[in-house]
Amino acid sequence: MEDTSIKYTEVSTCESELDPKVLLDNTSILIADYLSKIIVSNSKNIAGSESNCTFNSKSVPKISILNYYRRILKYIDLSESTLYFSLIYVDAICARNNINISFYNIHRYYYY
Image (cartoon, rainbow, N blue to C red; front, side, top):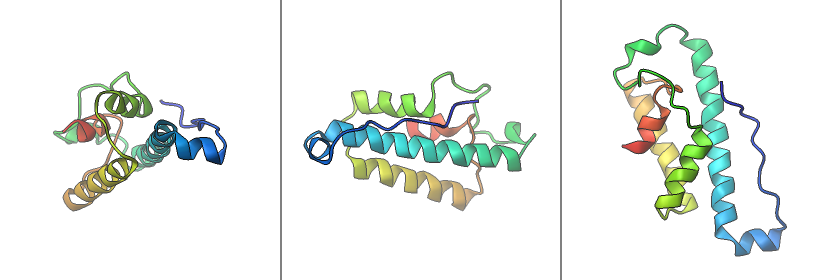
């Protein structure tokens, strides 16, 4: 399992206002930490039913959720609000279709 104790980049208020990359990275850390906690909670509630979802991968990807976010941000210029809206969008899709986010499918939601 993935370590959910993620360290935030520590900067003074003035520095963080001047460096949007630090703010974006901290937002990524917050969202990755939040998703990890949801996934751990879901895995306790739905043990044994992982193979039932057609959207799941056969194995858990080796890249962490945080590193996946960082990789997306490396190649695509996104804002903090876009990251938050993507979280809301994925949550709405999952709620509407009764899908549980897991380590087997979280990377696929943010790829498509």
